[in-house]
Amino acid sequence: MAQILTEQLDAQATAQVTGGAVENVRLVQDGSVEVAITQARTAFAGYTGASPFSQPHTKVRAMFGNLSQGVFQVVVMADSPIRTLADLKGKRVVMGPAGGAAIDIGRELFELAGFTLDDVRATYVSYDEGVSQLKDGAVDAVIVQAAMPSPAIQQLAASRRDFRLLSFDEEFMAKAIAQYPYYSRVHIPADFYGATEPATTLMVSNMVIVSADLADDVVYAMTNALLDNVKALQDSHPAAQDLTLEGAASGIPIPFHPGAERYLREKGVLQ
Image 1 (cartoon, rainbow, N blue to C red):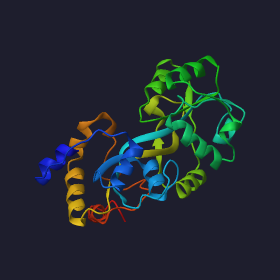
Image 2 (spheres, rainbow, N blue to C red):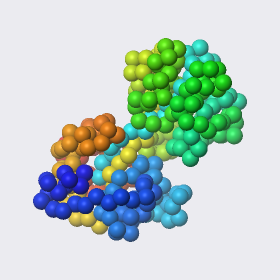
Image 3 (cartoon, one colour):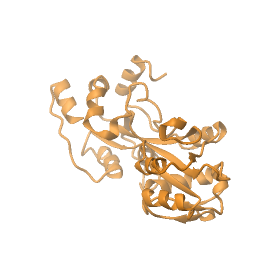
Image 4 (tube, rainbow, N blue to C red):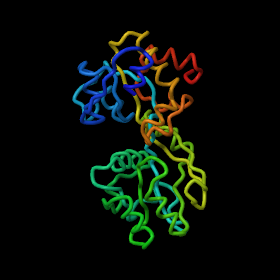
């Protein structure tokens, strides 16, 4: 990203190694950096002052989203009686590794479905180990919060065992997006993994944030430089393969910087 900005804008953009999504929001807020990558969920927490932030970070603005996608995938065997999130109550559920994103996102979505993490028999192991346990009948479901395709789910498909992913109904997804605007819908065709049926679920993307103090024309030019060179961004990192101009305005939970908003409206991807 820094290389594209340097080449396209005839300016010096320097990449910095930071402590990750939470620190990046704080760095934009305090002016240490002007552009950063974070998770949409973290940007929302920072802007509103929710945990792990102690106060609203009001200088943080969105440039664009869908830089990469973390998809909430609930895997069960094809003959499982589990058809909805609520059916997980009382079941043996792998939540992924301790400290992983599946736990926090699972907790939010469970509560929207009318139960809590305490209502499932949760275990915390790697996605690969969870899928192995699912095949052996040791657990009832595995929650994978990851970009697609997930290697763990591909491993299950390679075993030639019939499986499927839980699909959310439109009412539940609308409720989730209304309460947590960093979620977006994503459709997973049956043949994507080789599941017995298609699924529609929710995802959270990584996004680019900027300082509200940057001039509108500057942010317009940066947004133009990056999104007019989507292929270069995709080639820069495997996680950016899902980035498209058409999806750049979806799942954004905080206000756009006016410069970015102008570019996205001109391109017709923001109404």
